[in-house]
Image 1 (cartoon, one colour):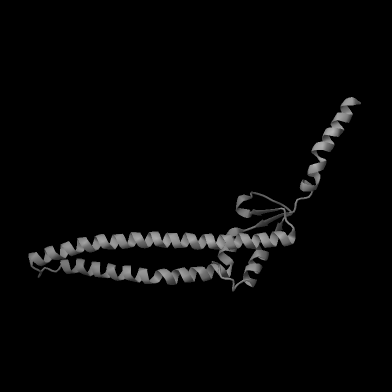
Image 2 (spheres, rainbow, N blue to C red):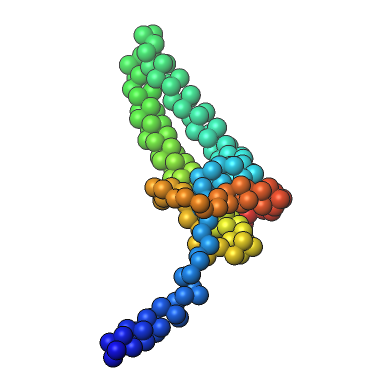
Length: 172
């Protein structure tokens, strides 16, 4: 009898306080990748990024064409030896400058894309929080991290709808 009372007391101490917190957790799932590629804000940011980097890309393309034209010019057999040497020096210099510009452009492009991706993800997480609070979900999981789950609400489309409603929201 003494052990029975201890066990009941232990059960009451450890289970009852957690009963409300873990009784019936509301779980939802989302597909972040689908949301990321579907929301209109992502398309806006992609267009802005493309516009911003396009002029630098055109400059590099122009330099590349000039570099290739000098290489073709070097193949001309009518050129004197001094002219060929001068063109070779120009080609070496232009190649160095072109590689530096390409490297700088690539780094800048990667930085801008990462910043844009982070802005979009922060926006998506804010939308997730809004939907989770409305639906009173305790846990929201990404489908890419789940092998199998049954009888759980998928709120992906709710988040996409909310993003479409906030289409004019500019992500800063």
